[in-house]
Structure formats: C-alpha cells, structure tokens
Amino acid sequence: MTHSYEVFLGCAIPNRFNNYESSMRTVAKELDIELIDFEGASCCGTVVLKSIDETSWLSMSGRNLALAEKRGHNIVTPCNGCFGSLKDTAHVLHDNKAELKKINEVLKKLGIEYNGTTEVRHFVEVLYDLRDQIKEKIVHSLEGLKVAFHPGCHLIRPSNVAGFDDPELPRKVDELIELTGAKSVSWGFKLRCCGSPLLIASEDVANKILIEKMESAKEAGANCIVTNCPACHTQFDVQAYGLKNEDGDVLELPALFITQILGAAMGLDEESLGFELNRVSLDSISDILGI
Amino acid sequence: MKIMTETWGQFKSFEGKQFKTFDAEFTQKVSNLLGGQDLTACFQCAKCSAGCPVSDKVNIQVHELMRMLLFGLEEVLETDMVWLCTTCYTCQERCPQGIDITDIIFGLKNMAFQKGITPAGYISARQSLYDKGRLYEPTDWEREDLELDDVPELDVNEIKKMLESTKLMKLQETE
Image (cartoon, rainbow over all chains, first blue to last red; front, side):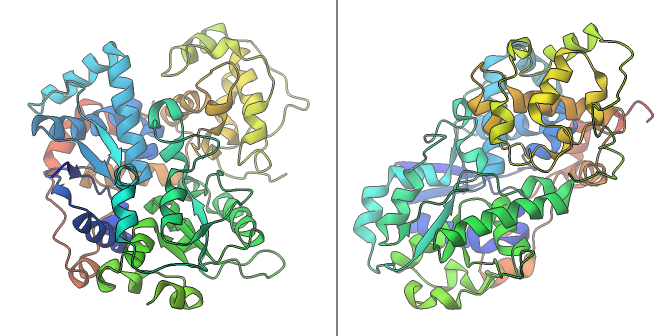
C-alpha cells in the first residue's frame, strides 16, 4: 500500500457532515488508501483559535502534529480548515526557531515534542495523485452535471503554505470532477471566500457573501455546488437551504462533497455515500447521479 | 454603508476624527507580530481591498487598516475590518510588496481580544475549546446509521493543562 495516513477529521465533519467522512472512507477503500484513526486528536484550533491567541493555536495544532510524528505517520484531512491550520502551524514552526522552542516548552509539559517532520495533506491531494486509477474506475457517467466547484480559501491560499494548486487558476480538483463526465463550469466568484468564518462574528455579513456566491453560480448555469470542506459546506448546504435574495429568487443549489460525486461515478455503495444526509434536495440531479 | 452596532466595530469613519498621537511603538509592536516584518513596505496601492470579499461591507477597508498601522493608530483595533476579515488570504496572496496582510490581521485580532474588543462568539468558542478540546461534538446517531466508528477519544485534561500553560483563559487585561 503506497498511501497510508492518520486521518484528521476535525470537529465539523463528525458533528454535521458524517456523509463526507463516510463517502471519503468509501472512496479511500476503493483506491487502497489506508486511513489510520488519529488517537487523541483535539480540534486543530483553526482560524478561531488563531484569532484569539496565536500561542494557544500553535500549541493546539502543534500537539496534533507531534502526536502523528511520534507514531511515525503523516496526516491527511478532508477539511480545508484543518489542512490550513495544521499546515500553517508546521510552516511557522519550521521557519521560526524561536516559536518552535516556545511551543516545545508547552508540549514538554505533556511529555511530547515536535521536531518538524510531519507532512500534512488534504484528501483531494491524495485523490489527485491517484487520478489515473480513478479514471479507470469510472463506471457511471455524470454527463449533464454542471458543477460550480468551490475550492475554498485554505486549500489554495496562501500558496506558499498550502502548496497545492495555482492560487488564481486552480484546476486540479476540477480535473477530478471532469473525470466523471461532469462539467466544471467557470463562475465569476469561484475563488471568493464562502463567508463561513464570519458565522461566528456576523451571520448577516456571512449571508451577504453567500448570496453573492450563489447568484454567481446560478448565473454560470450550474446545477450543483461541489466542495471539499465542511466549513464551506455549512454555507452551501445549511445556510443556503431556503435562501432567497432581495428579489425573492431561490438561491439554493444541491451541494455535494467531491467524494460523493466521485463515489457515484465509481458506482460505489450509495448508502455509504450518505446522500440521505444532504440537506438541500438532490431531486433535480438525482437522475444524473443515478440515485 | 452598513453601520456596525456591535461593541467591536465602533470606529466607523475618518471624517472629523482627531488623533492625539501617532504612536511609533504601536507600529513596532505590530511589526513584531507573526507576518508583520514587512509592514512598512506598504505603498497604498489598495490591491488588497480590490480583492477583499468584505470591502463593500465594512466601514474601514484593508488598505486603510494598513495605513493606520503605519501611522501607529491603535484605534485600528476598533475597526470592523479586524473581525470581519474572513481570513481568505486573497490580499496576502496578491500583495505586490509581499506583505503577510492576513497574518497581520490575525495578530490584530489577538490584540483586540486582549482588550475585550471581540464578537461574543469567540468568547464561547474559547470556552468550548478549553472545556472539550473541540469546537463541536460528534452526532452519534448519524454515525451509527452510516456505520462509522466512534471518533477516537481525547483526554480533555491534557488539553486543559496545555491551555492553562498558554494562559488562554486569562488573556484579557481585565480578566
């Protein structure tokens, strides 16, 4: 087995997007990606703790990095928030010896230490590595699916930390989407933040951003949104549920996880792909998905 | 323009505003934040604000915030831009001077939090991180339906010990 990782789920996925975890595990199994349980994982700290106190954030995230390092494993996560937070921490601790020393003073009290060797990857990076294998496994074409793919910010920015795709013209996940026969449409606000991090500060402003995103996706003729992040998905499948703009136009669109559409195209067990838990109705595209 | 009524976005406009001092020490303090080292390279091209998703939703925009930092105006901590930054990193990615703008704003949030200038949501998020080591708890019935294993256990005492050492619950000057 060439791909083996400790899987860092974070807080949001087990709380409200168990369909993402289930579809990820189903796809991983089909592609022989080994996902080892991450014992003792805390929250990554995410932008929330980084906003409150950077030392606590680096400690929280650093502890997770140190645990995986001690066990000799690298980390894979399906969440942009965890990916960004863990990678950003690794970046800071790698570049800044004074910070590393400071954080190790904290970790020492827990009997652990971070030496800066843990690799952090997003699950879509692993999928992209395996794109040839995925292509061979497509048994059901999703032709007719017009996807507004939302990469989310922390998958691609800041690019010197994320190191995954072109920050202004990302194409890698779109390539994966198009392997299924679906079309990844160009849309004006594709790279714009979904607004999710503002739900904690101002739901009003978060909603305004979401309305702009949804109008842009609709204008481009998309018939669904695809994400690879539970924080972004909260906007598209929870906050957008029943959302209307000032003119009364219904703005919701079916919102799917990348692993759900890949799983459907690979003909994997429908129940484990967790479509039952998607909140916005999938009726308008269920024929295409074959569900 | 939206008028923020929250306690954390009180600085609404430069119009008629008198500043007592330009505090060089404050600029220095911000330069020492993570990402703050190139702060003084800002030449006000405003490319940051051009790509910012909240530029049309705030009273003070990113390039204005950057200028306030250079001028040493601590009032910057009371602008709505600080807490309405979505952390999308578009400004940082595009800054022609290579300034880590988003990271600087994270540092400003830390400084504002210490002064008690923060949206209430952050206070409860902090409590939950300290009490449970997580922001949200697993939804067990969904996991059972999908035949997912339990989320691996976490020793909360370990997290508490760590966050006590970083003084997370005693950050505010009044605490």
